[in-house]
Amino acid sequence: MHIKKGFELMDVCGEAVVVAHGKENIDFSKVISLNESAAYLWHKVEGEEFDAPKLAHLLTEEYEVDEATALHDAEKMMNDWREAGLAED
Image (tube, rainbow, N blue to C red; front, side, top):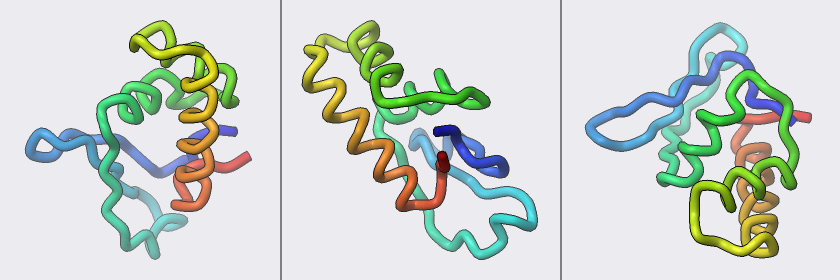
């Protein structure tokens, strides 16, 4: 999976917000705010291929979370990003 081209994570008034750029995202009418851990992961994998185990590993390195919880959270986040149109396989 990878973050789709044309999306950028920006700080807007202290909030991590995904902003769409380019013609391919012209119909993107949602404002998506990411929490601290999701923004951390976005920055770590932006421009790279990733999967749930990679994201889980990054979470366990940065936060005090066990591997099983991190993997569950990573899988959910990937699904959320896919459903929102932010990432694709």
